[in-house]
Amino acid sequence: MNRIISTLFLFLSTITFAQTWSNDVAPIFYNKCAQCHHPGGISATSLTTFNEVSPMANAINTYITNDEMPPWPPNNNYQQYVHDRALSSTDKTTILNWIANGTLEGNSANTPPPPVFNNGALLGAGDLEVRIPTYTSKAQIGHDDYACFSIPSGLTANRVIKSVEIIPGNRQIVHHALIYLDPTGNELTDSIGGDCSSPALQTTTLIAGYTPGATPMTLPAVAPLKLGIPITSGSNIYFAMHYPAGSFGEQDSTKVIFHFYPINETGIRQVYAAPIIENWNFTLPPNVVTTVNGSYPAGNAGLTNNVSILSVFPHMHLVGKDIKSFAITPATDTVKFIDIQKWDFHWQDFYFFKHMPYLPIGTTIKAVGHYDNTTSNINNPNNPPITVYPGLNTTDEMFLVYFHYMLHQAGDENYDMEALMTAEVNNLLKDENANGVSIYPNPSSNEFSINFEGKKGDKYSVIIYDTQGKIVSTVADKLISENTHITATWDGNTFQGETAKKGVYFVSINLNGTFLSKRIIKN
Image 1: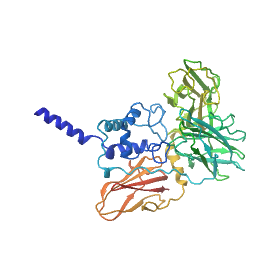
Image 2: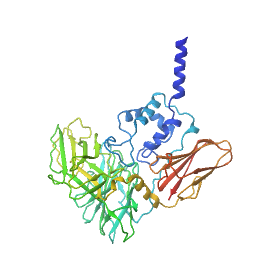
Image 3: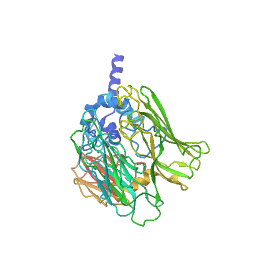
Image 4: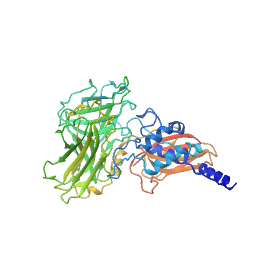
Protein backbone atom coordinates (compact mmCIF):
# COMPACT_ATOMS: atom_id res chain seq x y z
CA MET A 1 0.00 0.00 0.00
CA ASN A 2 2.79 2.44 0.92
CA ARG A 3 4.45 1.72 -2.41
CA ILE A 4 1.18 2.48 -4.26
CA ILE A 5 0.73 5.73 -2.34
CA SER A 6 4.33 6.75 -3.05
CA THR A 7 3.92 5.99 -6.75
CA LEU A 8 0.67 7.95 -6.89
CA PHE A 9 2.29 10.89 -5.07
CA LEU A 10 5.19 10.86 -7.51
CA PHE A 11 2.78 10.79 -10.47
CA LEU A 12 0.71 13.66 -9.10
CA SER A 13 3.87 15.65 -8.37
CA THR A 14 5.02 15.18 -11.94
CA ILE A 15 1.68 16.42 -13.25
CA THR A 16 1.68 19.37 -10.85
CA PHE A 17 5.21 20.58 -11.53
CA ALA A 18 5.68 19.57 -15.19
CA GLN A 19 6.42 22.43 -17.53
CA THR A 20 3.54 23.72 -19.61
CA TRP A 21 3.41 25.70 -22.81
CA SER A 22 1.44 28.51 -21.21
CA ASN A 23 3.59 29.02 -18.13
CA ASP A 24 7.09 27.93 -19.13
CA VAL A 25 7.75 27.14 -22.77
CA ALA A 26 5.98 29.81 -24.82
CA PRO A 27 8.31 32.65 -23.72
CA ILE A 28 11.36 30.66 -24.88
CA PHE A 29 9.89 30.08 -28.33
CA TYR A 30 8.87 33.73 -28.53
CA ASN A 31 12.40 34.90 -27.69
CA LYS A 32 14.51 32.38 -29.60
CA CYS A 33 12.48 30.76 -32.39
CA ALA A 34 9.70 33.06 -33.54
CA GLN A 35 12.02 35.49 -35.35
CA CYS A 36 12.19 32.95 -38.19
CA HIS A 37 9.21 30.73 -37.37
CA HIS A 38 6.28 33.12 -37.62
CA PRO A 39 3.66 33.70 -40.32
CA GLY A 40 5.43 35.41 -43.21
CA GLY A 41 8.88 34.53 -41.86
CA ILE A 42 11.71 32.65 -43.57
CA SER A 43 10.52 29.28 -42.30
CA ALA A 44 7.46 27.58 -43.73
CA THR A 45 6.79 26.27 -40.21
CA SER A 46 5.36 28.77 -37.75
CA LEU A 47 6.13 28.10 -34.07
CA THR A 48 4.22 30.77 -32.18
CA THR A 49 1.27 28.80 -30.77
CA PHE A 50 0.78 25.58 -28.82
CA ASN A 51 -1.08 23.98 -31.73
CA GLU A 52 1.85 24.74 -34.03
CA VAL A 53 4.64 23.64 -31.69
CA SER A 54 3.31 20.52 -29.97
CA PRO A 55 3.02 18.36 -33.16
CA MET A 56 6.67 19.20 -33.89
CA ALA A 57 7.87 17.92 -30.49
CA ASN A 58 10.00 15.03 -31.76
CA ALA A 59 11.75 17.12 -34.39
CA ILE A 60 12.31 19.95 -31.90
CA ASN A 61 13.79 17.48 -29.42
CA THR A 62 16.31 16.34 -32.06
CA TYR A 63 17.24 19.86 -33.16
CA ILE A 64 17.81 21.06 -29.61
CA THR A 65 19.69 17.95 -28.49
CA ASN A 66 22.03 18.28 -31.48
CA ASP A 67 22.41 22.08 -31.04
CA GLU A 68 21.08 22.63 -34.56
CA MET A 69 18.35 25.13 -33.70
CA PRO A 70 18.05 27.98 -33.22
CA PRO A 71 21.01 28.69 -35.55
CA TRP A 72 23.72 30.55 -33.65
CA PRO A 73 27.16 29.47 -34.87
CA PRO A 74 29.45 31.46 -32.51
CA ASN A 75 30.78 29.91 -29.31
CA ASN A 76 29.33 32.17 -26.58
CA ASN A 77 32.03 31.09 -24.14
CA TYR A 78 34.56 32.76 -26.42
CA GLN A 79 32.97 36.20 -26.94
CA GLN A 80 29.67 38.04 -26.40
CA TYR A 81 27.63 39.66 -29.16
CA VAL A 82 24.61 41.88 -29.70
CA HIS A 83 21.30 40.05 -30.44
CA ASP A 84 22.38 36.58 -29.26
CA ARG A 85 19.95 33.86 -30.45
CA ALA A 86 21.43 30.86 -28.61
CA LEU A 87 19.40 28.82 -26.12
CA SER A 88 20.69 28.82 -22.58
CA SER A 89 21.13 25.52 -20.73
CA THR A 90 18.01 26.38 -18.71
CA ASP A 91 16.03 27.00 -21.89
CA LYS A 92 17.10 23.65 -23.29
CA THR A 93 16.23 21.77 -20.11
CA THR A 94 12.80 23.42 -19.90
CA ILE A 95 11.87 22.53 -23.47
CA LEU A 96 13.22 18.98 -23.32
CA ASN A 97 11.45 18.28 -20.02
CA TRP A 98 8.23 19.71 -21.46
CA ILE A 99 8.50 17.33 -24.41
CA ALA A 100 9.39 14.37 -22.17
CA ASN A 101 6.32 15.00 -20.00
CA GLY A 102 3.88 15.04 -22.90
CA THR A 103 3.86 18.67 -24.14
CA LEU A 104 1.19 19.90 -21.75
CA GLU A 105 -0.54 23.12 -22.77
CA GLY A 106 -1.64 24.36 -19.36
CA ASN A 107 -4.26 27.08 -19.05
CA SER A 108 -4.42 28.94 -22.38
CA ALA A 109 -5.53 32.09 -20.58
CA ASN A 110 -2.10 32.11 -18.93
CA THR A 111 -0.22 32.09 -22.24
CA PRO A 112 1.90 35.25 -22.55
CA PRO A 113 0.97 37.51 -25.44
CA PRO A 114 3.18 36.60 -28.43
CA PRO A 115 5.71 38.92 -30.05
CA VAL A 116 4.65 41.08 -32.97
CA PHE A 117 6.63 41.05 -36.20
CA ASN A 118 6.70 43.72 -38.84
CA ASN A 119 7.56 42.18 -42.20
CA GLY A 120 7.88 45.61 -43.78
CA ALA A 121 10.43 48.37 -43.16
CA LEU A 122 11.08 48.98 -39.48
CA LEU A 123 13.16 52.09 -40.03
CA GLY A 124 10.86 53.77 -42.52
CA ALA A 125 11.43 54.97 -46.08
CA GLY A 126 15.00 56.16 -45.53
CA ASP A 127 17.04 58.32 -47.90
CA LEU A 128 17.89 55.79 -50.60
CA GLU A 129 16.15 52.59 -51.67
CA VAL A 130 17.81 50.15 -54.06
CA ARG A 131 15.98 47.03 -55.24
CA ILE A 132 16.96 44.05 -57.35
CA PRO A 133 14.74 43.21 -60.33
CA THR A 134 12.12 40.53 -59.80
CA TYR A 135 14.03 37.26 -59.81
CA THR A 136 12.73 33.70 -60.11
CA SER A 137 14.62 31.15 -58.01
CA LYS A 138 16.29 28.28 -59.84
CA ALA A 139 16.80 26.27 -56.63
CA GLN A 140 15.38 22.83 -57.29
CA ILE A 141 15.31 20.02 -54.73
CA GLY A 142 18.87 19.34 -53.59
CA HIS A 143 20.36 22.49 -55.15
CA ASP A 144 20.60 25.99 -53.72
CA ASP A 145 20.62 29.07 -55.94
CA TYR A 146 23.17 31.88 -55.53
CA ALA A 147 22.62 35.03 -57.58
CA CYS A 148 24.39 38.40 -57.62
CA PHE A 149 22.98 41.74 -58.74
CA SER A 150 24.88 44.98 -59.35
CA ILE A 151 22.46 47.92 -59.17
CA PRO A 152 23.38 51.61 -59.66
CA SER A 153 22.69 53.67 -56.54
CA GLY A 154 21.86 56.82 -58.50
CA LEU A 155 23.69 58.91 -55.91
CA THR A 156 24.91 62.25 -57.24
CA ALA A 157 26.71 63.32 -54.07
CA ASN A 158 28.88 61.64 -51.45
CA ARG A 159 26.94 60.66 -48.33
CA VAL A 160 27.56 58.93 -44.98
CA ILE A 161 25.49 55.88 -44.01
CA LYS A 162 24.18 55.54 -40.46
CA SER A 163 21.66 52.71 -40.92
CA VAL A 164 21.09 49.90 -43.41
CA GLU A 165 17.91 47.84 -43.55
CA ILE A 166 17.69 44.83 -45.87
CA ILE A 167 14.12 43.79 -46.65
CA PRO A 168 13.55 40.49 -48.48
CA GLY A 169 10.94 40.64 -51.18
CA ASN A 170 9.96 37.07 -50.29
CA ARG A 171 10.97 36.16 -46.74
CA GLN A 172 10.12 32.51 -47.21
CA ILE A 173 12.84 31.99 -49.84
CA VAL A 174 15.57 34.54 -48.97
CA HIS A 175 17.98 32.54 -46.86
CA HIS A 176 20.57 35.27 -46.70
CA ALA A 177 21.57 38.46 -48.48
CA LEU A 178 24.96 40.17 -48.37
CA ILE A 179 25.15 43.85 -49.34
CA TYR A 180 28.34 45.39 -50.73
CA LEU A 181 29.37 48.87 -51.83
CA ASP A 182 31.04 49.07 -55.26
CA PRO A 183 32.59 52.56 -55.54
CA THR A 184 33.74 51.89 -59.11
CA GLY A 185 30.34 50.86 -60.45
CA ASN A 186 32.09 48.13 -62.42
CA GLU A 187 30.65 44.99 -60.82
CA LEU A 188 28.43 42.87 -63.08
CA THR A 189 25.19 41.06 -62.40
CA ASP A 190 25.57 37.27 -62.38
CA SER A 191 22.23 35.48 -62.03
CA ILE A 192 22.58 32.74 -64.65
CA GLY A 193 24.67 29.90 -63.27
CA GLY A 194 23.26 29.78 -59.74
CA ASP A 195 26.73 29.77 -58.15
CA CYS A 196 27.63 33.45 -57.62
CA SER A 197 28.42 34.04 -53.95
CA SER A 198 30.56 37.20 -53.94
CA PRO A 199 31.76 40.13 -56.06
CA ALA A 200 34.69 39.96 -58.48
CA LEU A 201 36.52 43.16 -57.48
CA GLN A 202 38.52 43.61 -54.27
CA THR A 203 37.48 47.27 -54.16
CA THR A 204 33.89 46.14 -53.54
CA THR A 205 33.37 46.01 -49.77
CA LEU A 206 30.82 44.15 -47.68
CA ILE A 207 28.87 46.44 -45.34
CA ALA A 208 25.78 44.56 -44.13
CA GLY A 209 24.04 41.22 -44.19
CA TYR A 210 20.58 39.75 -43.74
CA THR A 211 19.84 36.41 -42.15
CA PRO A 212 16.42 35.39 -40.75
CA GLY A 213 15.83 37.10 -37.44
CA ALA A 214 18.44 39.78 -38.08
CA THR A 215 17.73 43.41 -37.29
CA PRO A 216 18.73 46.41 -39.38
CA MET A 217 22.34 47.56 -38.97
CA THR A 218 21.92 50.75 -36.99
CA LEU A 219 25.18 52.44 -36.08
CA PRO A 220 25.24 54.77 -33.07
CA ALA A 221 24.31 58.16 -34.52
CA VAL A 222 24.01 60.56 -31.57
CA ALA A 223 26.78 62.13 -29.50
CA PRO A 224 28.90 60.95 -27.77
CA LEU A 225 29.27 58.26 -30.46
CA LYS A 226 28.33 59.09 -34.05
CA LEU A 227 29.55 56.46 -36.50
CA GLY A 228 29.13 56.25 -40.26
CA ILE A 229 30.22 54.49 -43.46
CA PRO A 230 30.95 56.71 -46.49
CA ILE A 231 29.30 55.98 -49.83
CA THR A 232 30.53 57.86 -52.88
CA SER A 233 28.43 59.26 -55.72
CA GLY A 234 28.07 56.91 -58.64
CA SER A 235 28.50 53.78 -56.50
CA ASN A 236 26.72 50.54 -57.26
CA ILE A 237 24.99 48.43 -54.62
CA TYR A 238 25.93 44.78 -54.99
CA PHE A 239 23.53 42.08 -53.73
CA ALA A 240 24.76 38.51 -53.13
CA MET A 241 21.57 36.47 -52.71
CA HIS A 242 21.06 32.91 -51.46
CA TYR A 243 17.83 31.04 -52.25
CA PRO A 244 17.48 27.60 -50.59
CA ALA A 245 16.83 24.26 -52.26
CA GLY A 246 13.20 23.69 -53.12
CA SER A 247 12.33 27.36 -53.79
CA PHE A 248 12.29 26.81 -57.57
CA GLY A 249 9.79 29.05 -59.34
CA GLU A 250 9.30 31.39 -56.36
CA GLN A 251 9.96 35.08 -57.01
CA ASP A 252 11.84 37.67 -55.00
CA SER A 253 12.72 41.35 -55.26
CA THR A 254 14.84 42.15 -52.20
CA LYS A 255 15.63 45.76 -51.45
CA VAL A 256 17.99 47.68 -49.20
CA ILE A 257 17.14 51.00 -47.56
CA PHE A 258 19.92 53.40 -46.54
CA HIS A 259 19.62 56.15 -43.96
CA PHE A 260 22.17 58.95 -44.30
CA TYR A 261 23.44 61.65 -42.01
CA PRO A 262 22.50 65.16 -43.11
CA ILE A 263 24.98 66.66 -45.55
CA ASN A 264 27.73 68.55 -43.68
CA GLU A 265 26.98 66.71 -40.41
CA THR A 266 30.00 67.01 -38.12
CA GLY A 267 31.54 64.78 -35.49
CA ILE A 268 31.06 61.52 -37.42
CA ARG A 269 33.73 58.87 -36.93
CA GLN A 270 34.35 56.80 -40.03
CA VAL A 271 33.67 53.07 -39.85
CA TYR A 272 35.56 50.84 -42.26
CA ALA A 273 34.43 47.42 -43.48
CA ALA A 274 37.01 45.14 -45.04
CA PRO A 275 38.24 41.53 -45.19
CA ILE A 276 41.24 42.14 -42.96
CA ILE A 277 42.16 38.45 -42.99
CA GLU A 278 42.55 37.06 -46.53
CA ASN A 279 44.29 33.92 -47.71
CA TRP A 280 44.10 33.06 -51.42
CA ASN A 281 47.12 30.78 -51.43
CA PHE A 282 46.01 27.36 -50.27
CA THR A 283 45.09 23.98 -51.75
CA LEU A 284 42.59 21.51 -50.31
CA PRO A 285 43.49 18.00 -51.49
CA PRO A 286 40.77 15.35 -51.52
CA ASN A 287 40.09 12.99 -48.61
CA VAL A 288 41.92 15.02 -45.93
CA VAL A 289 41.22 17.79 -43.44
CA THR A 290 43.45 20.81 -44.16
CA THR A 291 44.41 23.68 -41.84
CA VAL A 292 44.49 27.20 -43.28
CA ASN A 293 45.86 30.26 -41.48
CA GLY A 294 45.70 34.00 -42.01
CA SER A 295 47.44 36.94 -40.39
CA TYR A 296 47.42 40.74 -40.63
CA PRO A 297 49.65 42.63 -41.04
CA ALA A 298 51.99 40.31 -42.90
CA GLY A 299 55.18 39.50 -41.04
CA ASN A 300 55.69 40.66 -37.49
CA ALA A 301 55.14 44.40 -37.88
CA GLY A 302 51.75 44.66 -36.16
CA LEU A 303 49.10 47.37 -36.53
CA THR A 304 50.35 50.91 -37.09
CA ASN A 305 47.28 52.51 -35.45
CA ASN A 306 45.20 51.91 -32.35
CA VAL A 307 41.95 50.32 -33.53
CA SER A 308 38.47 49.64 -32.13
CA ILE A 309 36.62 46.60 -33.55
CA LEU A 310 32.84 46.77 -33.98
CA SER A 311 32.04 43.44 -35.61
CA VAL A 312 33.44 40.26 -37.13
CA PHE A 313 32.24 38.24 -40.13
CA PRO A 314 34.15 35.02 -40.95
CA HIS A 315 33.59 33.57 -44.41
CA MET A 316 34.20 30.09 -45.84
CA HIS A 317 32.30 27.97 -48.34
CA LEU A 318 30.92 24.44 -48.32
CA VAL A 319 34.04 22.50 -47.36
CA GLY A 320 34.64 24.69 -44.28
CA LYS A 321 34.70 22.82 -40.97
CA ASP A 322 35.54 25.43 -38.31
CA ILE A 323 37.10 28.88 -38.00
CA LYS A 324 38.49 31.02 -35.21
CA SER A 325 39.77 34.60 -35.21
CA PHE A 326 41.66 36.49 -32.51
CA ALA A 327 44.43 39.03 -32.02
CA ILE A 328 47.73 39.04 -30.15
CA THR A 329 48.75 42.35 -28.58
CA PRO A 330 52.35 43.50 -28.05
CA ALA A 331 51.92 42.43 -24.41
CA THR A 332 51.04 38.91 -25.75
CA ASP A 333 47.45 39.22 -24.54
CA THR A 334 44.85 37.40 -26.62
CA VAL A 335 41.87 39.45 -27.83
CA LYS A 336 39.06 37.07 -28.82
CA PHE A 337 36.83 37.78 -31.82
CA ILE A 338 34.97 34.62 -32.80
CA ASP A 339 35.09 30.85 -32.53
CA ILE A 340 32.77 28.86 -34.81
CA GLN A 341 33.31 25.21 -34.00
CA LYS A 342 30.81 23.88 -36.55
CA TRP A 343 30.88 25.97 -39.72
CA ASP A 344 27.58 26.27 -41.60
CA PHE A 345 27.71 28.11 -44.92
CA HIS A 346 23.97 28.72 -44.72
CA TRP A 347 24.16 30.84 -41.56
CA GLN A 348 26.51 33.80 -41.93
CA ASP A 349 26.30 37.25 -40.39
CA PHE A 350 28.13 40.24 -39.02
CA TYR A 351 28.45 39.63 -35.28
CA PHE A 352 28.59 42.98 -33.49
CA PHE A 353 30.36 42.97 -30.15
CA LYS A 354 28.55 44.08 -27.01
CA HIS A 355 31.72 45.98 -26.15
CA MET A 356 34.26 46.95 -28.79
CA PRO A 357 37.60 45.14 -28.46
CA TYR A 358 40.61 47.48 -28.41
CA LEU A 359 43.71 46.66 -30.46
CA PRO A 360 46.78 48.75 -29.62
CA ILE A 361 49.59 49.56 -32.04
CA GLY A 362 51.71 46.49 -32.71
CA THR A 363 48.79 44.03 -32.48
CA THR A 364 48.57 41.16 -34.97
CA ILE A 365 45.17 39.85 -36.13
CA LYS A 366 44.99 36.12 -36.80
CA ALA A 367 42.62 33.42 -37.96
CA VAL A 368 42.80 29.65 -38.29
CA GLY A 369 40.33 27.37 -40.02
CA HIS A 370 39.95 23.76 -41.05
CA TYR A 371 38.47 22.39 -44.28
CA ASP A 372 36.97 18.92 -44.40
CA ASN A 373 37.34 17.78 -48.01
CA THR A 374 36.25 14.21 -47.31
CA THR A 375 33.12 12.18 -47.94
CA SER A 376 32.20 12.53 -44.25
CA ASN A 377 31.43 16.21 -44.90
CA ILE A 378 27.78 16.10 -45.95
CA ASN A 379 28.11 19.60 -47.45
CA ASN A 380 30.97 18.63 -49.76
CA PRO A 381 29.71 19.46 -53.28
CA ASN A 382 31.94 16.81 -54.85
CA ASN A 383 31.51 13.06 -54.51
CA PRO A 384 34.08 11.67 -54.77
CA PRO A 385 36.05 14.65 -53.38
CA ILE A 386 38.36 16.54 -55.73
CA THR A 387 41.12 19.08 -55.14
CA VAL A 388 39.56 22.44 -54.22
CA TYR A 389 41.22 25.83 -54.75
CA PRO A 390 40.41 29.39 -53.65
CA GLY A 391 37.92 31.13 -55.90
CA LEU A 392 34.72 33.14 -56.20
CA ASN A 393 32.24 30.37 -56.97
CA THR A 394 30.40 28.53 -54.24
CA THR A 395 32.10 25.24 -55.16
CA ASP A 396 35.50 26.94 -54.77
CA GLU A 397 36.69 27.95 -51.31
CA MET A 398 37.43 31.16 -49.44
CA PHE A 399 39.22 32.06 -46.23
CA LEU A 400 38.19 35.58 -45.23
CA VAL A 401 37.41 37.41 -42.01
CA TYR A 402 35.63 40.75 -42.42
CA PHE A 403 35.58 43.39 -39.72
CA HIS A 404 33.81 46.65 -39.06
CA TYR A 405 36.44 48.80 -37.36
CA MET A 406 37.55 52.38 -36.70
CA LEU A 407 40.46 54.31 -35.29
CA HIS A 408 40.46 54.00 -31.52
CA GLN A 409 39.59 56.78 -29.11
CA ALA A 410 39.90 56.53 -25.35
CA GLY A 411 36.82 54.92 -23.80
CA ASP A 412 35.58 53.10 -26.91
CA GLU A 413 35.72 49.76 -25.13
CA ASN A 414 33.34 51.04 -22.43
CA TYR A 415 30.42 51.84 -24.73
CA ASP A 416 27.30 49.66 -24.47
CA MET A 417 26.98 48.96 -28.18
CA GLU A 418 23.65 47.14 -27.91
CA ALA A 419 22.10 50.18 -26.22
CA LEU A 420 23.60 52.67 -28.66
CA MET A 421 22.68 50.67 -31.77
CA THR A 422 19.13 50.07 -30.54
CA ALA A 423 18.64 53.78 -29.82
CA GLU A 424 18.95 54.62 -33.51
CA VAL A 425 15.60 52.95 -34.27
CA ASN A 426 13.96 56.04 -32.77
CA ASN A 427 13.88 57.30 -36.37
CA LEU A 428 10.95 55.00 -37.15
CA LEU A 429 7.75 56.31 -38.59
CA LYS A 430 4.78 57.18 -36.42
CA ASP A 431 2.45 54.32 -35.66
CA GLU A 432 -1.26 54.05 -36.36
CA ASN A 433 -4.02 52.77 -34.10
CA ALA A 434 -4.69 49.08 -34.64
CA ASN A 435 -6.71 46.19 -33.24
CA GLY A 436 -8.78 48.35 -30.90
CA VAL A 437 -5.74 49.21 -28.79
CA SER A 438 -4.95 52.87 -28.10
CA ILE A 439 -1.77 54.13 -26.49
CA TYR A 440 -1.23 57.63 -25.20
CA PRO A 441 1.11 59.37 -25.49
CA ASN A 442 2.88 57.61 -28.36
CA PRO A 443 5.72 58.42 -28.91
CA SER A 444 6.75 59.19 -25.34
CA SER A 445 9.89 59.26 -23.26
CA ASN A 446 8.17 58.23 -20.03
CA GLU A 447 4.89 56.47 -19.29
CA PHE A 448 2.54 54.89 -21.84
CA SER A 449 -1.15 54.40 -21.10
CA ILE A 450 -2.34 51.22 -22.85
CA ASN A 451 -6.13 51.07 -23.34
CA PHE A 452 -8.42 48.38 -24.75
CA GLU A 453 -11.96 47.07 -24.30
CA GLY A 454 -13.05 43.81 -22.71
CA LYS A 455 -15.65 42.44 -20.29
CA LYS A 456 -15.79 42.45 -16.52
CA GLY A 457 -14.06 39.30 -15.30
CA ASP A 458 -11.81 38.96 -18.36
CA LYS A 459 -8.28 37.71 -17.72
CA TYR A 460 -5.60 39.78 -19.42
CA SER A 461 -1.83 39.98 -19.71
CA VAL A 462 0.20 42.80 -21.25
CA ILE A 463 3.84 42.36 -22.31
CA ILE A 464 6.28 44.74 -23.99
CA TYR A 465 8.61 43.21 -26.62
CA ASP A 466 11.50 44.71 -28.54
CA THR A 467 11.82 44.38 -32.32
CA GLN A 468 13.74 41.11 -31.87
CA GLY A 469 10.76 39.55 -30.11
CA LYS A 470 12.48 39.60 -26.71
CA ILE A 471 10.56 40.45 -23.54
CA VAL A 472 11.31 43.94 -22.22
CA SER A 473 8.68 44.25 -19.50
CA THR A 474 5.62 42.45 -18.16
CA VAL A 475 3.06 45.19 -17.56
CA ALA A 476 0.20 42.92 -16.47
CA ASP A 477 0.30 39.21 -15.71
CA LYS A 478 -2.98 37.27 -15.69
CA LEU A 479 -5.02 40.04 -14.06
CA ILE A 480 -8.84 40.03 -13.83
CA SER A 481 -10.67 43.00 -15.33
CA GLU A 482 -13.01 44.87 -13.03
CA ASN A 483 -14.48 46.99 -15.85
CA THR A 484 -15.19 46.83 -19.57
CA HIS A 485 -12.54 49.47 -20.24
CA ILE A 486 -9.08 48.19 -19.34
CA THR A 487 -6.04 50.40 -18.80
CA ALA A 488 -2.48 49.26 -18.19
CA THR A 489 0.53 51.52 -17.77
CA TRP A 490 4.07 50.88 -18.94
CA ASP A 491 6.52 53.04 -17.02
CA GLY A 492 9.12 52.85 -19.80
CA ASN A 493 11.42 50.56 -17.78
CA THR A 494 12.66 47.02 -18.38
CA PHE A 495 11.81 44.12 -16.12
CA GLN A 496 15.24 44.65 -14.52
CA GLY A 497 14.12 48.13 -13.43
CA GLU A 498 16.35 49.93 -15.92
CA THR A 499 15.19 52.67 -18.26
CA ALA A 500 14.36 51.08 -21.62
CA LYS A 501 16.43 52.30 -24.53
CA LYS A 502 15.04 54.68 -27.12
CA GLY A 503 13.45 52.94 -30.06
CA VAL A 504 10.52 50.83 -31.18
CA TYR A 505 8.68 48.28 -29.06
CA PHE A 506 5.52 46.24 -29.42
CA VAL A 507 2.82 45.90 -26.79
CA SER A 508 1.23 42.44 -26.99
CA ILE A 509 -1.99 41.63 -25.13
CA ASN A 510 -3.70 38.35 -24.24
CA LEU A 511 -7.34 39.20 -23.52
CA ASN A 512 -9.05 35.97 -22.44
CA GLY A 513 -7.26 34.04 -25.19
CA THR A 514 -7.55 36.76 -27.86
CA PHE A 515 -4.30 38.45 -28.85
CA LEU A 516 -4.03 42.18 -29.58
CA SER A 517 -0.97 44.25 -30.42
CA LYS A 518 0.31 47.72 -31.20
CA ARG A 519 3.62 49.43 -31.82
CA ILE A 520 5.17 51.82 -29.28
CA ILE A 521 7.86 54.40 -29.97
CA LYS A 522 9.98 55.46 -26.99
CA ASN A 523 11.98 58.65 -27.43
